[in-house]
Length: 101
Image (cartoon, rainbow, N blue to C red):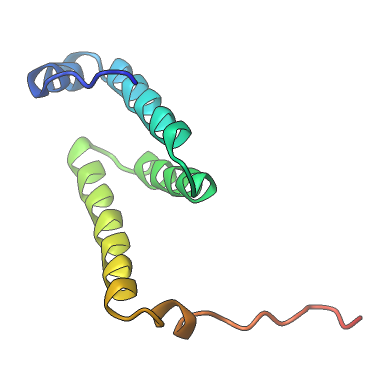
């Protein structure tokens, strides 16, 4: 796996070479997904959603707030599932077919 540079190097990259920092982020994300044992489709979906949200951000602080908000939402859902195991069953929807066979 690609080693993560120290904080000072990452900060310098953010200020001087943002495209290289983005390339590093993409590479590390891809490696993390490829090395995961399960839920690759969910991770791909999460990364796609994150990238779409971040693409609309106008500055690095906005990107940070958006990413933190998404993480907080996922952690809140995880907390609900852990504390109330039937949480997902209660929040599932009934699928109604569009056409009658």
